Image (cartoon, rainbow, N blue to C red; front, side, top):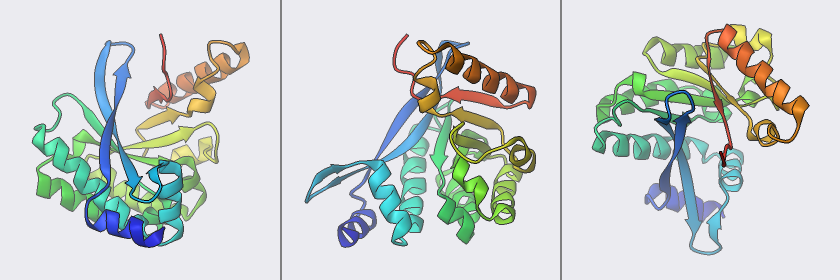
Length: 214
């Protein structure tokens, strides 16, 4: 429902959750990913895939992104920057294409007193298939100010070696659909191992999404 989602964003009725990012090498939390959650008064909890997609299709994504940035940074500021932890924020292709999101994020960092180096801007692989020049400009500006850039859901979309050479990327996040089978599928395990090695050869950090057991 467009009206309810718009009013929920405007009246701050969404919630921000932090999902931990765990270092296998160091055995402790090294960061968190900020995730928006919405409980509709009409239908109850709504999947992020559903309401984010709906927001993108109905010109609410700019408002949702602005809400998410400020809500996240408010918590980070209250926690005094989450010492030693990076905070990942998801940026939509639509907001990157329309411009202004780099300035919006940098202004918000200044308002909340959070250093740019504490933030990782995440974009999905699909962003790499859009207006490449405008996306490169936006991400370049963020990178110049110290914000790290991660490609989310890597391995199931459009990214290629050529794209990776154009974008100021610092991290790859391997999609959970690949990671989920590494313990039972030898070929998938080899594929993920190759992606990790490939990323490391480019000087990129890697995160495996969706690890849920030892």
